[in-house]
Length: 241
Image 1: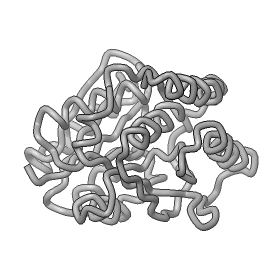
Image 2: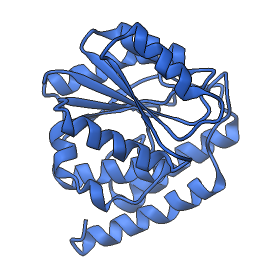
Image 3: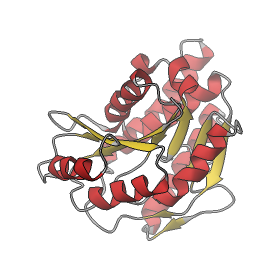
Image 4: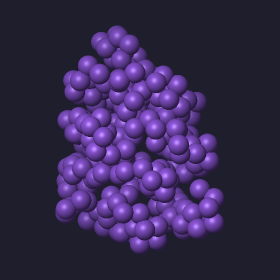
């Protein structure tokens, strides 16, 4: 199958999901979307079901019983994509902080064999973040710098959540061994791909803070990411990745 799947995890994104899906669908007729909803009480899943009638056979919905985390949402989406033969699999936020208009650039980099992993990078050749408070920007940028130092991963935006993978990456990486969520999930996926010799390309994007809904960032996510990079480095040194 020469099609692309865009995986969009959701929790309480009723204010954003319809527009996000519509803009994804507008990019190309070869794009499908999978929404992985963690039991949103605000009716996010109901909106997705209504959108399915507008785009028959192009939007699917995976409903989970509760808030199980970003990492497990993407892992469920990866399993779905591999089982249905998608060639390129993308991660994208539902809140439109990732511009769907950038999807074709990430996908094209994969399909023209420029790379195996294409990252929509906020920090390549400068900082491209709009409307973030200074504290959050410093936290994110500092986390990328810290991770590069510890793991030696040659990526400027290691916590980026706007990513496209060729299916061969997901087939090679031991997805069943991944237990990370949040930022650490994004770090672990990139690190495992790099350690297996896959080519990673960063493509500059502009990241815009959400205008509707609430951020899912928490102190627990930050702590997990801070410790996870050391775990990854140590496991790699002992050949246990």
